[in-house]
Amino acid sequence: MAARPPADAPAAVRTGRGISPVALLRACRPRQWLKNVLVFAAPAAAGVLVTAQGALDALIAFAAFCVAASGTYLLNDAADVEADRRHPRKRHRPTAAGLVPVWLAWIAGAVLVALAPALAALSGDWRLPAVVAGYLALTFSYTYWLKHQAVVDLVAVAGCHVIRAFAGAVAVDVRVTSWFLVVVSLGSLQLVAGKREVELRASGDGSTRAVLAAYTPGYLAGLRAMSSGAMIVTYCLWALNERAGLFYGISIVPFVLIVLRHNLLVDRGVGEEPEELALRDRPTQVFVALLLVSLIIGIYLT
Image 1 (spheres, helix red, strand yellow):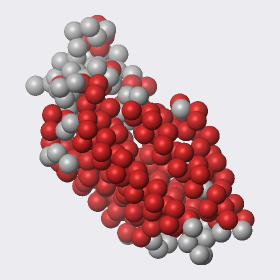
Image 2 (image 1 turned 135 degrees about the vertical axis):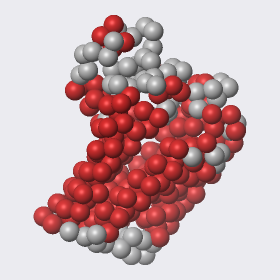
Image 3 (image 1 turned 90 degrees about the vertical axis):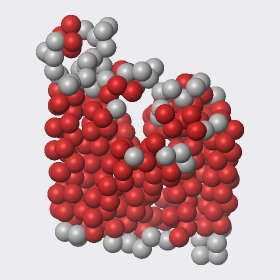
Image 4 (image 1 turned 60 degrees about the vertical axis):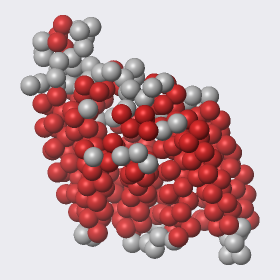
């Protein structure tokens, strides 16, 4: 039986009429595509984005992950529609609000999921479609099982971010260093721990997400502090190694500022949607810009 939209939804929504393409696009969560910028990290660090082929392959990977992510978001919203309607913020998502029928979310999600590996195949390398398929497998495992397993759910979400970063390296055929993987993994874990911490504080009893009942704010804050501290140390070791230049060392300052700013915002109760911080928080934007400038100079100009 199709799930019913909220009682306070507009009449056109409750009757199933007035389906809007704009609502369907919103259900694809284009703002979440910002996470897929991670696919450019390895190509940029390797200095290959200045070549036409490198830029094209990275863009193919980015597009494939945007399509894959939107497909999984649609399927996830269709599966979690009732739980989302009990969430103070998620209840306004197009599927939960009834703006996109559940059946349409299922169909559109399935189409996008099938399209993503095919799009990745345009790179001409079988490994990129394989990585996209691995991302989809992990996402589905999370949606239908792993998100109910305490601690494992944190690692699964962080793993999706790591796969994005790894896909960029595969797309342009560059080697992934241990430094890169450790920093990305710890950074992803920090973001996920902060996200869960804000969710838990907002819900109080964890009723909006079942697995939250297994956590305490202290545990999540400790995990966030541990991962951010280890990430800073790892980044410093990479930036200050004897083969790095001056601007790598300079990049430590904005990098640390980004980490500290995120921790401050999470403590204030902000950070349930990390991509929103990048879009709206001005200090974070300034710190990210300084980090990029120092790394661009270090990688491409020195």
